[in-house]
Image 1 (tube, rainbow, N blue to C red):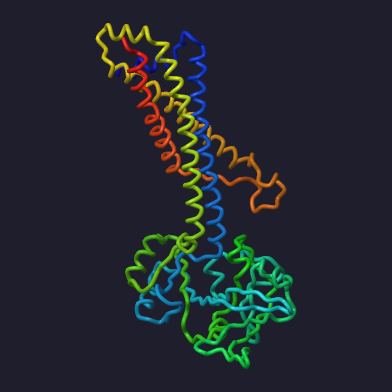
Image 2: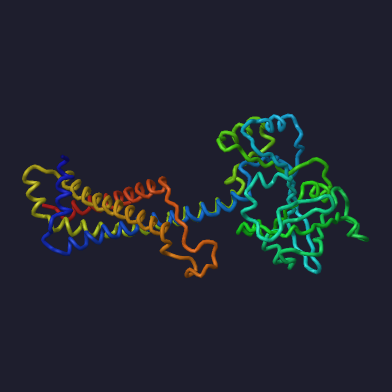
Length: 410
């Protein structure tokens, strides 16, 4: 066995001459453990919120989405796109057209995103899980077109769950100058009726702005013939989404962009990743402060073991070996603190997942979930362990070398 490590291990667990040293060593381990526990729990909570948000988007967004790199719309009938449509991995293919418009209901107005979709949109996404109301998801019939609004947009317009009067939709005519003498002549106007349902994604981006309607209505309103703004895909259950995404990207070339669900919501997830990273940095800084307790513990231990050091020197030990003993002592404190903190953090995350110990908003039910969501990622646990060990090792290296030179002079 390595001699410095063996002696350091004995020093860590043996009783010291002064009981205060044992207490300070215990406090050092607890400080590192608490900082590690905070890292595990905080990062896991961020993962939980990210997974929860991803679940909401999953019900509304397609598995893959094809858009044009430059411009708003493109023709879906090109040879390359026809080749993509023939891929055996694709289960549902839906053309969509999105554009901004103004909507008016009686005396209330709001800006909205009109999303025209094909009739197989229900097969593409789990939209049924987001619908509320006594009606059904229907986009058009032989007489009128229907609009399914987000719940916040319903509230803003004051239409109620099932409005009787039609919703007026206005959009500027393409390639037409505004006639200042008669501005209304520069806009297309059409009407949407209520199917008796609204959707609730629990994301303001959708709930406060989006209206789902038929693709033909959107093309008629925005003066398009066959153009689309996106093609949305659902893959077969056994298909590898990442592999299919790469395959379609190669087939379409640089003129098109193929996005998965996370890339479709890149801004939201990027913000969450930045928040998670900043929290990681702050907690790492707190961990570094906690390591000062380790330095204090080592200082007192070095003073307490002067006689042992003299004995080792008489036996032929040099300053390098003696410094390694106390380096191992500090590293063992960091190691035990890291292991204890990770174990306790994982246990706390387990109990939070199972029993919801810490609630949101006092458990009043005003939030989407009653308790903080938690999701433990193995990569985060490994990162935390490496961080604690690295910070602990680096924090004791210089102090130990300095103290062994200054405090243990012959």
